[in-house]
Amino acid sequence: MNPRTPLRPLLALAAAVSLTATAFALAPAGQAATPDPVGLNAPYEYLGWGSPQSPTAVMAATGVKQFTLAFMLSDGGCNPKWDGSRALTGGSDQSAINSIRAAGGDVVISFGGWSGAKLGEKCTSASALAGAYQKVINAYRLKAIDIDIEDTEVASATVRQRVIDALKIVKNNNPGIKEYVTFGTTPTGPDASGADLVRKGAKAGLALDGWTVMPFDFGGHSGSMGSVTVTAADGLKNVVASAYGYDSATAYRHIGISSMNGKTDESDETVSVADFTTIADYAKAHHLARFTFWAVNRDRQCPSGTPAGDACSGIGQAPYAFTKIVAGYHG
Image (cartoon, rainbow, N blue to C red; front, side, top):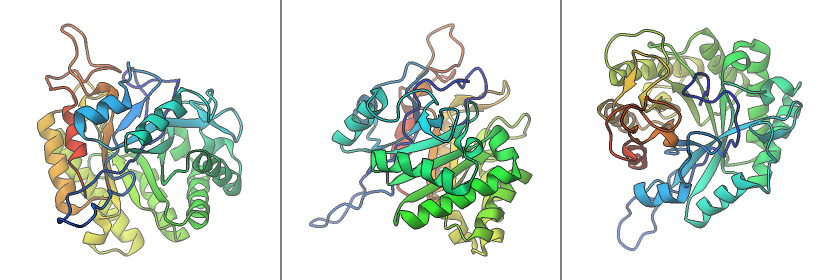
């Protein structure tokens, strides 16, 4: 997602992998359960801030099998490091990933976010950027990656094209890998930069698995956050359908939603558990490619007198109320 305000860190200290694990659906007797696609239902967890919970403890408490661990950034050049400073392998981030997998889960690593040096900007060619993505894929044997493209990275047409071209290279070189792109939105759908990103993907022939919007931090909107999220997602569906020539049902299966739980970065925005349930019902009705939120770190009620922040939602809620809803999503 995008750590861009006091509720989202400006410097990533331990970006973890956008983790998407194997969540299992019920299957007829005598038939093996089919694992959920990696990234389908993987809430974000940021291991470097907000008093992060143990991923395996979250798994045990909620049934969630996947996480999106944030963020992989540039070390100042075209080289990936956790939060731009921590070694790609061998540290606490790898330990967390190992523990998740040992417990039956898996991870997707998220590249980007709001702050920090972005690989999309620091790598000066699509092939170099694809190489940076590939380095992380190889290090963690990833089945899915998430590109959270925000701020100056998404604002540049040159960088947007570079990211699209790099993702196409990665897709061609890694058969079966899932690719998700996450970006901001207006209350009615993608803004000009977001819509252009989708059109660039279609023109390049990029078979992206899930174009995902972050329907919050609108700076003004009417209606509940549940209803405005549905409107924003429908707007994304229309853009994807137009760009790719999909019918509505197919377009829905190529989009996703990444919400924010509780009070967002805007004083007039709150995503309640009821709102999130509305969003989940919409995702289920249309079989969206991805349903997630920012962030597990905040999926708990604040202590009395403590405002919403990195480690709590700012609303009355049961522990892991949002994560449990995501865990129940199977497309």
